[in-house]
Image 1 (spheres, rainbow, N blue to C red):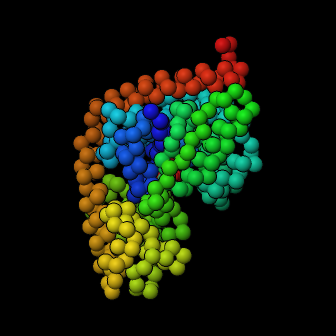
Image 2 (cartoon, rainbow, N blue to C red; image 1 turned 30 degrees about the vertical axis):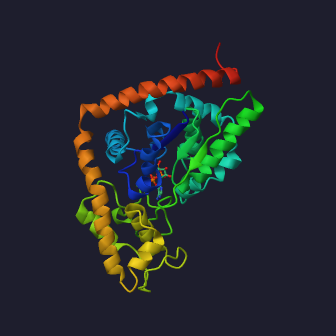
Amino acid sequence: MKRVFSGVQPTGNIHLGNYLGALRQFVELQEEYQCLYCIVDLHAITVPQDPKELRKHILDVAALYLAVGVDPKKSIVFVQSDVPGHSELGWILTCSSYTGELSRMTQFKAKSQNKASAPAGLFTYPVLMAADILLYDTDVVPVGTDQKQHIELCRDLAIRVNNTRKKTFVVPEGRYLKAGARIMSLDDPSKKMSKSAENIHSRISLLDEPSKIKKSIMKATTDSEGIIRFDKDEKPGLSNLINIYSALSDKTIDEIIAMYEGKGYGDFKKDLVEITVDALTPIKEKFDEIRSSQELIDILEDGAEKANEIAEKTMARVKDNFGLGLK
Ligand code: AQP
């Protein structure tokens, strides 16, 4: 059975971008692949985190995985720092990477912008992400298109090591959905929707109350033309909302535009609020059921054990091919 790996940082509550770009694929893929879904807490500490908040977010993200439909009987759900192989392989791959290629990563550039000095972890973050993926001989990585450059780096590292040593890694492929692959911020559609953006109305979190969803959508930046049409360059705000509408309703963009011919942005936004609330209400209900249960902890402990079993096999092969340790 081919293998899938993906992860989400526990840096806040999962938003529509994470859901539509990545999580919906998680659920779909577990029917066909052996899936490992990770809460990547080591990535979260590339920027300062309050320890109590971080623990809370780890459990929130884990509960949200289950609430959107990840099934622990089919998929391995675990926390990254519970598997030492991630850090170990991260270091080994750091030694196979170049500072030039890492300094070209757009996410590093964006996150270190306007900082006198950026944390080194932010710089090496894509290498740890490559380690996460390669540790499990992953074939497919379901992510949003914002991660394309990191997936390319992961492939380059795998190919580089395979070409300079014995074949060590499976070279993975990224998997990107058409609708939802890149959801933009509601207040500034030139930026991607993000958990850590300051303005809470820039995003819709999966756990938002209906009144907050309504406020965020009704406030969302559009334009003054007043005609509902899809044009990412001329009308980025409205096009982003149409994209969200399409991803949540399974209607095509053309169908949506035809439905709103002659109607105003107000009508469109009101319907989008309803569609969003309808889609997120069952997720929130399931989340509330699971979040404080012992079952959640048991699932994560069991997941870490299974993930470790796979990781240890890969690490034995990697160490052997690199000549590390005594055997
Ligand atoms: N706006 C987005 N549209 C589509 N997909 C997205 N993803 C993130 N933002 C969007 C996808 O969600 C998965 C998990 O992302 P992550 O939490 O590991 O990190 P991120 O991409 O850095 O997400 P955020 O929300 O922007 O977090 P912060 O603010 O903490 O940096 C990935 O598959 C990603 O592609």
